[in-house]
Image 1 (cartoon, helix red, strand yellow):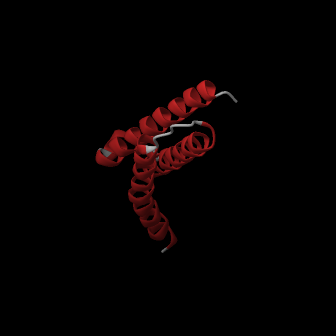
Image 2 (image 1 turned 135 degrees about the horizontal axis):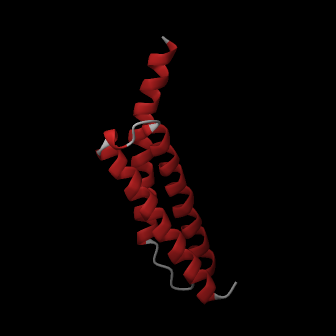
Length: 99
């Protein structure tokens, strides 16, 4: 893959990761926005954010000569936060259903 193609794919993956992380964060801030399946959608968005961010970092480190991974790192941290907060709610739902 050429450097320009790698740079473009890293940019797309990074911004897609940031977008999914922001959407997940907004759904955590406003949990009543989704009437059905709220924490599960948030968990899926958080996991998607992590996957996109780490794919961007992997491609950037391997194939872009002057890679600056701050935005993809921000997306990864946002993904961890979304998974953490959505996971707490999902775990509470599972525990209340089990007892």
